[in-house]
Amino acid sequence: MLSAEFPLRGSAFFVALSGGLDSCVLLDMLAVHAKSCPDIKVIVLHYDHGLQSDSAKWATFCDDLCKNYAVDFYLNAGGFELDKKIGLEASARKARYIWFELIMKQIMSSHSSLENGVLLTAHHCDDQAETMLLNMLRGTGLKGLRGIAAKKDISKFGSKNRRTLIRPLLGFTQAELKGYAKQQKLQWIEDPSNQVLEFRRNAIRHNVMPALHEIKPDTNRQLSKLSHRIADAEQLMQEFALNDLGLSQQYDFSPFDNSYGLALENLRIFSVPRQLNAIRCWLDLIQFPAESEMDLLKVLDWSLNGANSGAELRRGRRCYRYFQDTLYVMPFENDVQVNSIDWPLVWNNSNQPLSLIEYFSSSITWELCCNEGSKYYGSALELRTVDDVNSIFLPNGEGHVQAKNCFQAAKVPPWRRHNALFITQSDNKFVDLIGGQKQSDFYLRLVDA
Image (cartoon, helix red, strand yellow):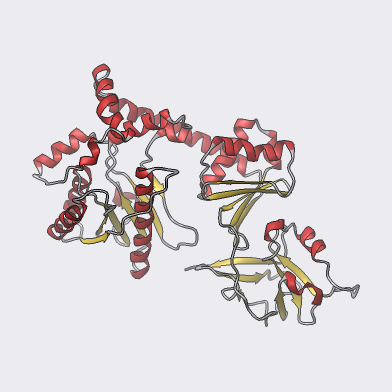
């Protein structure tokens, strides 16, 4: 499965190792396979949350295990910060996956030969059944009812490397994994917190699942089959959504406010559920998955019943905004910081891209480019901010530029206007404004990291 989709050469396989039965089986399977395939690069990641008094011993156990397999071992023993809004388990999981992605990025960046990073976790069939039941109790949507995805793209915006999360053991029950472990004479650690019934998952594992197995012995298998059927339904809904989104203008990532935009006008020919499906799919594509169905209904109401340009909804780590029948989504901390530089920013020859690394305070580098067919292609130009608008003249000699008129013509959302860039000729005559919805002779281009 792994070698078919990810070439062994140029791929690194990261194993999330807790020291428990499931992850020890996963590591053994991969390590055995790696012995016959020298191109496989195996890296083990262990996060010590510090929740147990013996957690340091678990880290030592994992380290010793990796030495026996002769694979690289990385440890994070920094604990984590509890977010009371999501609870202990979710906070620990969030911290763990943030670190997984960070260490994957660091390792892959330091090895130019690595193009694919595959994170492997040991979730199995019983985990899938428990997750589906947990999500049912939360009143989940279709995605939650499907449970744990077998594969997920975890690449970040601007990354030149592909990073994917895979759960290769979802087709196996825990009983089967335990049988394998005993046959291979593996050792593992039993986590005492797995017996604490205050955690809902444990309560389902120890109380609900045994009762269901009394009624239907293969409950976990049947729920796994249901998950596959739901995944098929999800795929059909995504195909509908992608087709519907093809009718709508989608605005790429903007460094002026770290936002994406979706024009809603052409979606209104569809039913409300179909519009919601398209918006939900779009949010998934830009890696801002919806946290609440009520939030989606709220932003859709902006379009159906009209809303002013100040409409805003802040939820979790995201902020929804509405402007000229377009939905924008951005991080909660959306106030982009720009560097203080000497103005104007000189662009000596617009047939060459102009780096904006001095302007945007970001790890991602952007360039300003001019279309070859533009009458300004090859011209000497300058960039200014709204603070310098009084020094910018209209090209026909009718006086100074009015910032409000420029913003309206370029369809720049109000919250983004303080960062927009005015392009002028060397004699201070207005050429264009960058930062709005309107297409122009100029565009921003992401420079590969």
